[in-house]
Image 1 (cartoon, rainbow, N blue to C red):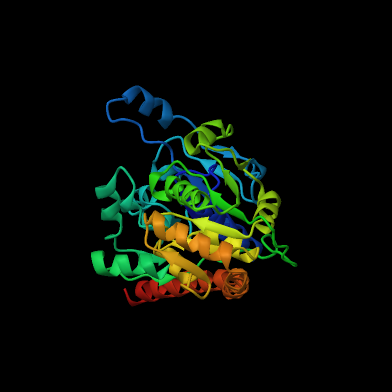
Image 2 (cartoon, rainbow, N blue to C red):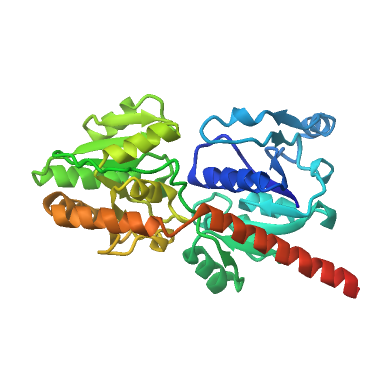
Length: 366
């Protein structure tokens, strides 16, 4: 099959980007012809000069190795403007964010049968809420990464979707033998989106420390190279890692005892899954998507979003109860093992081929 993935950005290290690159490269490894198309940034309607310049430019093709934070063998094709003439003919066209779905639905049929891979319910946080909401009503086949997104689409838009939970690559994220720290190390992600709940997480950590508990905080992120503003905002210093590559990230997870997720909502939440694959115990808010793997009191301790007191209490429980800490680690690790990349990729191929067969049948009937 000829398969084109359409994205609105490619350079940011995120769970969604990692998952899409993994799917695309695995599909290529199975013999499919895969393209990676990046939409141009929108040009304001009154800037005719820029529109004219963009119309005569060519597609910029960057080598696969420009993506240095995950394995990638697919060139990156960046459009000069969002025009159908730049989109290759394909069997399958995969939209991956609301901007790409909004553009892709208007393309001619020869550009590919449209699938909308919904990785988050973006209308909760994007500035363009109404535009995002409209894309969930589009008449195209939808794939989602969690039942939480599926239920949102059904309840709010009357749209069904196939659930394809994104696995963790356990050749990359693993911990053969867990080493527990006497001074517990708590890991969390820094992000500047407020809904990622970073500030809530810091407040929960401070509450735990204020109650006399000792811990070592470990933070990683890609937004700030210099962590000094984070130290100043928190009122204390901590271990910080900027844009850690995969092996370094695995080492960070494996060196920690607890992973703390304080997001308000997540389409799935791959960082928590990666940490669990490295045998961290998970303390998380109910982000919606996390319920695919975070079973309260079994594989994680789960609290309501923005409930800092409950977050801190769950952290304290694990600091005080070594048996619970280790049982959550083991059960969580087993839960993550239930999700398999090979099976997920084969399932995606099945969805594509089934849709193409239906399309061919309709053409024959016509």
